Amino acid sequence: LTDLQYVQQKQTVYKEQLSSMQKLLKAYGSQAKQGNISRSECIRLKASELDFLKEISDLQKENNQLQKELKTLMNVPSASYLKINDVKFTPELEKLSNINLSDLMTSALENRPDVKVSILEEKYNERKYKYELAQRTPDVTFGINYDRGGNIMNNFVGIGFSMDLPFFDRNQGNIKVAKFDIDKSKFAREEKNNEAQNEVIKAYEDVLIAQKLYEQISENYEAELDTLLESYFKNFAQRNTNMLEYLDFVEAYLQNKTIILDSKKELNEHFEELQYVIGKEL
Image 1 (cartoon, one colour):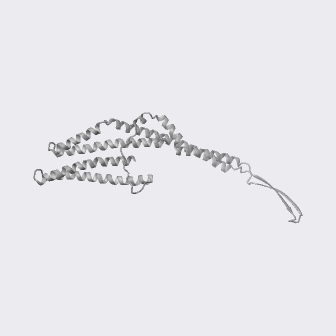
Image 2 (cartoon, rainbow, N blue to C red):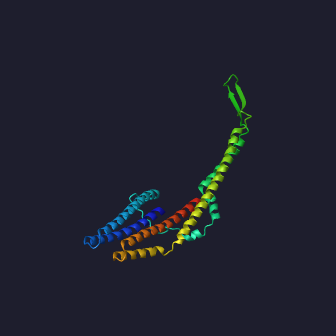
């Protein structure tokens, strides 16, 4: 969902710039035909238009791939088109300010399925060991048989018993195997606990790094970028700004818009990863 949200927002940014570029290209093409401006300026704008078209084309392919994956996961009709709005593209920062690393590590040990499986495996082997210990004493079976007129004796009464062999083995082989399995599952559980805790620490630190970058971007910066771009567009259209200055700013604008989107995407992804490694939602 975050990836699709990101791609669609980035598409919107590039489509807006493509629309502006095509307006300029149409106006400059008309001026070039009248001989008011050089043909080279139109060609330079056309090159920028092609750059935008290529970027939008690549983003659309990525969008298509994400659409396919999400529609399969969500079991929605194949003819549907998923459009993700801007809501919750970044997590609520209040949630991030209240998290505690120690609590997160405890949560991972209590909630993660893979950790629970390692605990159950150890318990299973402990019970298996007790069962094999119980098999040290051979099973002895007693039986009584009565037969009337079916043999050379009119009334036959037989008593017998059976006992597992070998008597002196006392199930030592299976007991050793069971004891080995206990030790093995114990080490596996400890390894899984360490793995889970290390994953929590990494995810937690990644969230803090992403949050720091996100918070260093001023809340008004994106709006200021949009306002400044509009100003550059008007000045260039009125020939108050040359083409090089305008295109340089457009490139810087797109780079900065991408950085802003990347910061939001990474913060959300790292927050989701943190929730995944602790086994519950925050």
